[in-house]
Image (cartoon, rainbow, N blue to C red; front, side, top):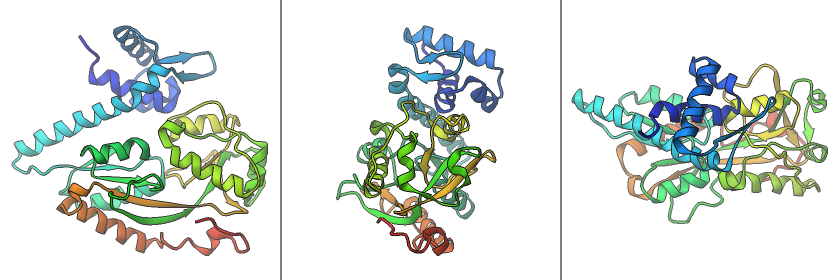
Length: 315
């Protein structure tokens, strides 16, 4: 018998948090039960998915390869259940498939919250694969809308910028840089940065490298990788690294976020839309909602208090 959907859910939770205790709390199971299920999954597959020590949990190469497909399998199963319920109730409508990169980030979370309020009749399949895999899904017809930086987006895919967001630096509240009101990018030369792999988010890695070059420094990458804001928060609390980031949806109280300056990096959030569904009612409704939200929050004009007078902004 192959792995059950429950096994995949538990695997994804541990992979995102890189902590069995944190994932167990999120799943409302005991840490012992979670560990046992992961061991069962590894036994069924015949491979190790995690490297465990007394102080850390890391994905193996097999675990990294499995994470994306596991998320897709969970999303597909949820979509199948939703579809069956709606057909059974006589109210079928295909889900709007949106990749928001991460629910831990403010932009995608705010957009979906507003969209669900405005259009409760349109089911949403929320995906968090990121731009690299999202562009493939757009081309293959497995995704309708992708949010993120469009620097690698093919010309045939329609795009529209919905937010220009200044970048902040996330760190532990007792980190040496936390006492600063703003952090010059050049100060990052002394610290390792938490970044995704280039395979997962090459556009973000290139973006960070660009504004670091403008400040005359080279990126020092922290050797570990985390998945999701929970995992990132854990390593930031331990002062193992700092992370340049867009704003988090629900930032933990024991972390602080300081604006980066000299230069002020500006991240252009874009909607990338699958051409085949550009004019469907669901996608048109999402695009109009995004435009309304962008106008309501002045997302296309970074506020003056974000930009910090006298600092040059990148574009």
